Length: 305
Image (cartoon, rainbow, N blue to C red; front, side, top):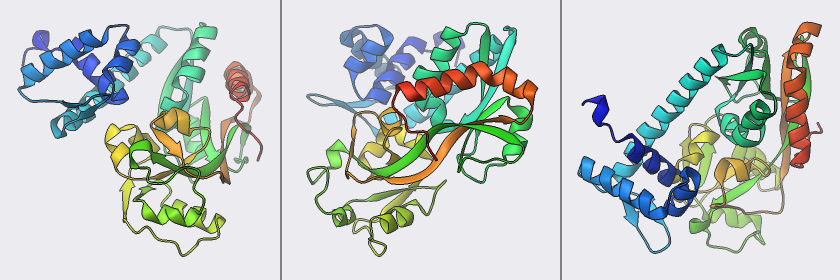
């Protein structure tokens, strides 16, 4: 396949439409008209010889071929974005290496990462993906990063930490799967839904149900495990079941398609900005730490431990 013949504009339109499940929202993102998006996707479908979307009255849904292509295209675009970011960072005088879990790279992209670079053009940010777990080896991470966003209880040996957001976990349901009005009158109604388990936190449902006083509750519909919270961005998961997510991160991580099921939220660990415990590291990361913590406060994110 000749690179010069790749339908790159059509792929950009497809990626946006698949993420939003809407030609209109894709058009808004790419500054095009919905008809232009539809034309590009029809061109791509003709090029592939297969339908990529099921077109309904008010929405579109990916076909099996569409889901398969979206997995490949979204990965390719993220890789391309990372490559371009690295090249840009190399050309800047002050490059800060920020280590963070994959899902936070998406949650923080607009209001934190892009906003920081825009407000501080003297810096470039190099993003490093790390595990989203309290057991992440922070000293090893800080060998390759200037600052890391880590999940924990507020203390990391030989490091300084600055709280960013304390987590409050609740259950969220895709709107199309809702079979009760929310918030649920009885938390035991959670059992009537298919449960999604985060592989990074396999005991999360047991912990959450204990908080509700429902330790013995089981899903009547079964369960499915997903890789990490970032996987829920795949539109395919909007038909799979309900998930446990922080109430402040959910709007960024899941979008408006998911609805909060309960008024209750269980306090959990917190994300903090962490840097090596020395004056040079503190000085180097001062602007980023102050900007990120100020943005979190502006958004009303709780930061207490």
